[in-house]
Image (cartoon, rainbow, N blue to C red):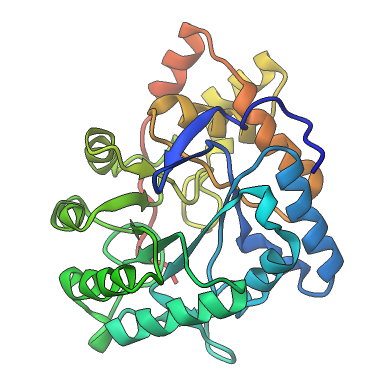
Length: 304
């Protein structure tokens, strides 16, 4: 592998007991390259060349397509931590691309599907996507499952060696407190500079040495979420530093808390390089104070 960096993008963080780049790659947008397998593989290889060693995926991204691209692109020598998630499944022909799969037997089936499509014997880290908070689907009927029952299923698979570590997503403060004894290593909640309702959850993660991996870090994945790039203070910082507003939003997250790990996604190699370059941005005290003072604005909920 030819590396163009001397350090991990954004510095070094820890996830599932190992060092990783603080700027990783969220693979969901690889679905957009469904007609160009070669381009998908090339983008993943480019991420590795730029120092990324933390990639986030799910079996329900493109009904296994994204996992298969990762399997084709990565080599053991790359040393990349591939993180997957459970709690939803593909919904071909349905009103949405995915549907919830929260029941314990569905979690097990999803782990097995991830193992198969990634071509591995063990998932180093699995995030359980809950539906308790943030944007996204809400559980109804038999999809309303107690977190203890879900964790019991994941712990059993960890004991069997199918899972290395367990994380949570879209979880409340109370839910995280209940789950901590299970050995939670990661939390993925919707969070950005302009949407910080889960600051108390982040604070608990800092105290417990749990990685914080925000999704929607720029607030743009759902139409009703406030967008970081619309914020005047972000635009002013971008203009002053000669950077993009997106880069400012990512850089602020890295500097907001020491346990933040980013997984911005893209299907474009140029945008990938810009995301990774956000890790080199530094703020003077006045700029950082102006960004910290931006008010948090909640999204309209729930969203599909």
